[in-house]
Amino acid sequence: MLDKELVYDVLTVASQNGGPFAEIFVENNEKNSLSMINGAVEKALWGVDYGCGIRVFSGYGAVYAYTNDTSRDNLLKVAREASQAAQSGKKVLPSHLDLQKSVFESIHPVRISPASASKMIAAEKLRMASEAAFAYSARISQTAGSFLGYVQDVLIANSDGLWAEDRRTRSRVLVEAVASSPNEKQVGYMGPGAHMGFEFLDTLDFKEIGFECARIAITMLDAELCPSGRMPVIIDNGFGGVIFHEACGHSLEATSVAIKNSVFSDSLGKKIASDKVTAIDDGTMPGEWGSLNIDDEGTKTQRSVLIEDGVLKSFLIDKLNGLRMGMASTGSSRRESYKFAPTSRMTNTYIAAGSDRPEDIIAETEYGLYAKKMGGGSVQPATGEFNFAVTEGYMIRNGKITEPVRGATLIGKGSEVLLNIDRVADNLLLAQGMCGSLSGLVPTNVGQPMIRVKELTVGGRR
Picture (tube, rainbow, N blue to C red):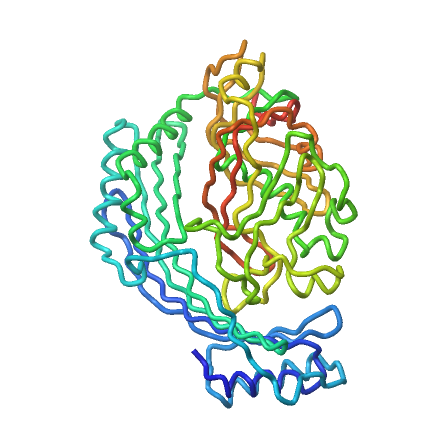
């Protein structure tokens, strides 16, 4: 993407005012997308994002600059400006920097590049989902579907002598169905994705996806308003893991921990969850949406046990925050693109499977809420306080799932939820999403088996 002589010169200039660490990140991202409304193509796009970011450390801070002009003169100009802004005062770059290529084997084989895949085939598959949703009920008023595929090539080099190159290939499908009545609208949604090529679409049953989106929308359209109050809450597997991701996972990222802006900053080695809870972040899972061969600082990703049997074992750490904490990187540095400086982020983050059976968890619950599908929400990392919407919910009465309810929200603190989990099932499932933070939007998996929180505040409308 750039030749070694130019990269060496850029790092030399970036370090000329004494930055203890300089880094260059080059990206070429080829994107292919298609969106449809009611089975008809609305938009079809193809494009390339290309550019370069230069970062220089200054004490425990950093200066970051980026450009999409990678000509020699411009890159040296940007590097010089970043170096002047850092103003560390002591040159540390070796006079003969030896850039050594990092060697690793990709765990994500690709058969068909999604960047050049047939939009006609994608449209046919999405149309199948739309037709299945409309066939489910006459009250389905609209469907939407989209396909996104991209191939992101990156080059990362730094003043420690690292030279790393990687190719990230991802494919994702988004489908939703809208159910309408004279006074109400409800949406059913699914968004499967993978670190795979266009062949990922052949693993999906688009008729079933359309059917499921319609089922959720119609079920919630007919649902009663959810009662409010403190009660046991059973959160199903898959995207139910968004609560751990948002309310707890972000608080375990060094982005917050290093500056003491996390409720868990001083809790390493301490019990922060019930004995039932083991939580993992694993960027090495083949083909998974959140996986990477290397992170965006060129460090190999790894499997990190965050919580083991309720005890906090590790954080998610990038290079800069690792310096602040006196701890090594865990391969957790990520960024949306060359326009963002990297920081610690999650990859595939989940609560590990337990030994309880889902049917037993339901049967043992006299009264409570069953949150089958979760939606979005908000969280404050410093306190762990959260508020999440339940997109498909049911009441549990006398150990049985009964009437559907809508308008439910789950309100609480991540630290309290972790301690109040008293059942963890054996049916682990991952689900795909996009996570936003200081370094932009990145693909992440959330996940968990079915869990029960013995008491949680449910916000409702009656």
